[in-house]
Image (cartoon, rainbow, N blue to C red; front, side, top):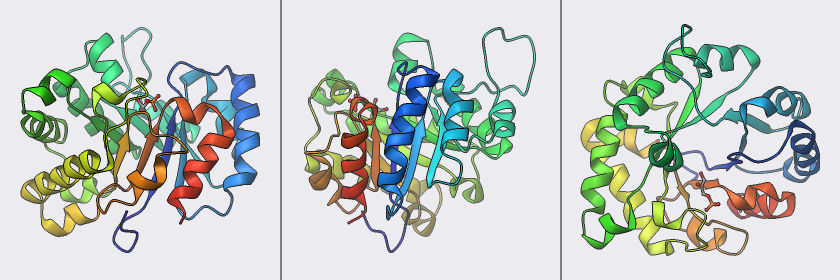
Length: 255
Ligand code: 13P
């Protein structure tokens, strides 16, 4: 992290976990423990938990995010939720292009780009996820894969809009596997993402972008990962479902 030039952000991605009642319990437990955090704290929760999450975190420093949004404002898209709908409820962030969406639900860089544009146009702050498969890492094409995702996912996003974008580097092989990237691997790719952003925009714009690491980040490895210059926070899956673990990661980012 380099807090002198950009915000540190710890975000939980609950995925398909927690009912509204459980969401209230978890957020009520976490909120008083992160009130002095020296980083932004976000919980990205299932659509059905959003209302409860917003109410439970009112007056606290936990911000609420959704886990996806559609690119159209409204229309015949059964089962989908638009960015405008989320914004009106008081949602501030939205996870886009998560590898589970890409892997199981046919998400492509084209649709991630459309969703990113729609989120920004509605005033939501997207957390855009990129990351390579193990096979791609083994074939030494990690940088090619990441550069392609960054270029396509952020196509037509202006430098002004980029100020509201968070990038999450999530190597697919590290998600939910207990296999964390080493701090050096995380730093290497996060720095590469910043270099790519500098080429696409300006070095100054790239310096201001928060780039998170995600993939089996937990209370025991957070310190080391966050000690790296270009790792500005974390997108936390499993460990965000347990208040003490999530709080410990927030504390690591607050140092
Ligand atoms: P885990 O922390 O469970 O590996 O999940 C990471 C992730 O996918 C966050 O979006």
